[in-house]
Amino acid sequence: MYAVIMAGGQGTRLWPLSRQKKPKQLHSFAGDKSLIRETYERLTSKFSNDEIIISTLADFVEDIKSILPEIPEKNYIVEPSLRGNAAACGYVSAVLNQRDPNSDAIFLPSDHIIKESKKFLNIINYGEKLVNKYPDNLILIGINPTEPNTGLGYIQMNSQIDSDDGLKAFSVKRFAEKPTLEKAKEYVMSWEYIWNSGMFIWKTKRILELYEKNLPVTYEALMKIKAAIGKPDEEKVLKSEYGKTEITSIDYGIMEKTNDILVVPGNFGWSDIGSWGTLLKVLSEAHDAAIVTKGHHIGVNNNNCLVLANDKLIATVGLENIVIVDTPDALLVCNADKSQQVKDLLNKLKDEGKHFYL
Image (cartoon, rainbow, N blue to C red; front, top):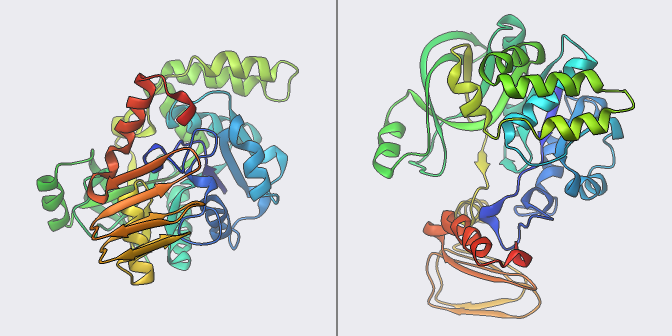
């Protein structure tokens, strides 16, 4: 089994620290190590370095190599352009299938926080058993919800299909996109709904069959790329064909179009650091503190604030539920509950031609 670390994302909601040239997975947030380094180290007790794959963009390769020098060169699968995770997952699956037609792989985001690694690895082991027991199925790892989160997608479970040592696998009834607060409250009250973590396990042969059925244009491009692997024109074919893949997500392109899916609910201290508000919550709980700071900060009568200072002192008085992030060329001040809207701020920067700050 291969473990694929998906490290091509932009992390736009964590601007201005996360940038196009250095996205969030290359930064440290909850400790001294970068998120991608923490992801790698969680896997090393099960996977050898030859079994760990890095899926990323050319812009990030050198930084990742400096963070993960253990990963062999051949295990960097580099997208020539950013076209959504359906194209990225398909490309990796085609490469791994070319190496081993019977291969299976787990795809993992590089920017999540997981507090209980042993429980997490137990679920991976169970997922590996499931994908070999039910090879026509895609296996998803879901998260038991702890709050009515409106920033995450949900999976509605159906009947139980399998169990092993306290872990259970369910068929999937449907996917529910990021809900309203009222809907999210309904989901949390029901046992049927769990968070979609974006972690998948599948046989590479099977997923390519689903691409052929559901994303035929992408499939045709992937097959041409696969056929060129190891040949003199490999790079030329990759660049020309990858640009023909459909720009979509694996959820929209594949998951929502097939019934052959099993999901395993998990509870292993998971957090998707998708916004500054989420990071504030994770860090305040971890440190049991109402104010989370880094760098030069002094404050009076503040509550539930995140302050990431740079070279200069940041002084705060009487603030509540506020995030402040200072970088050499940009300063962000936002309400923690509105931090998902940082992505809208970046769209405004693009519209105004201020690409230097992206």
